[in-house]
Image (cartoon, rainbow, N blue to C red; front, side, top):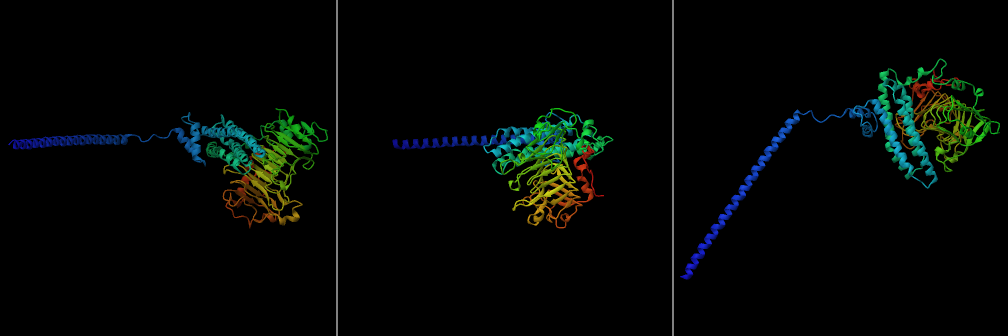
Length: 586
């Protein structure tokens, strides 16, 4: 019985435990359901609110004016930079330069493009000046770079100064000068790079100057685009520059009376400031001594007379030596000579027997020689960097790279120039009128090329024009001319430009006329033209079929005459310089 009572009690307790468990489970389930319902309700509320906010934003957006428009400065800069080859570089750099100007004018942007290019070259110069090379050749090339980059900054600063305080309508008249200076900037940068031998150092300098060259190219493009608009406002184009700046006698109005007398006289009637005579009968025995003794300032022209003699020295006419005249007793009587060359360790830039940097330089009846010989590769007789440089009845003798027409505007009249490979090279705007160009005998493995013009940007106003001249074999090559191929030129840079017109071309020139530099390089972008030439070598029937070569008509040829191409009326219309401003062809 006791056992039965115990069993009943145990059974009852078991049922009570089960009921309590069910109750707890029920409460737990109810709680979970409640939580889920609350969460769902909260989600719905949030979703509803988000939908309401989204609708409100959409409604607000539909009533807003849209994204903020570009500022006036951004619009102006983008419009001007649209015509450049390096648009992003242009926009980024110039926007930064005009950041403080809320509404820059085109003139402000032009000036900023010059300043940006100048700042970048200064940065490169600072970085390059910290470099040192144990190799003498490479160190010399680096030192030349620093000089050239400094010259480039001077050209840019000159460009900036030229537009200060000038009204829009008058700016178009500045275009030829500014294009000339900016073209020189690009030339200096490339000459810096080319001074190094192929290798790591050259590649490093090329990379270092990449941005600088882009800024220079952009500046040229901006000048072309903006100033053309200003020209329309003025009602006349850049080609009219300074045509009204000549007096009744044909002299530029800015030229002093003394200057006119000196330039307008026969060489024998020049009144020299000093005389150089090798025999001691003058003021100095060397040309360099006479140059070193020049006064810092002087009125009109400073005239140096060089008597008969062979002067074995390196002559440098510095940038500060402006309006200098050097005349001699004849191009084969008064001769400056040297023999520096590439093979013996001098960069091409340093091989020149005579280097001319001073603006307004005038040489007459004097000779320049480099006697290194054809086996010594580049050996320059004359390097000309000066603007408005004139050579009359002069003689330049050498082999490879005789005349380095480096930069700016140059005029050669009745000159005698000899050489083998690329014997007229560089990136100047140069006209050779009534000149005798004699091709010499090279070493056995070489071919002759008269020109190697180095225009590297399509907007540069540079190029070589050979007009009413003669291209012939000299006495030593003549009997062996069939053994050596000779050409009118080849493109050393992408936009190389050479025009040969109204010239007697001898039978030494190959029927194709022109030679490649390296495969297809520059054949689509160069500009090589011929017009109304004579002689066996002038036949164009078998000329190269390059896209960049053409036989031009009279209308196109006129563009490359002394008047429009060099703006020659402003500085060449003087009695002492015989010049044809247009074509000889009627």
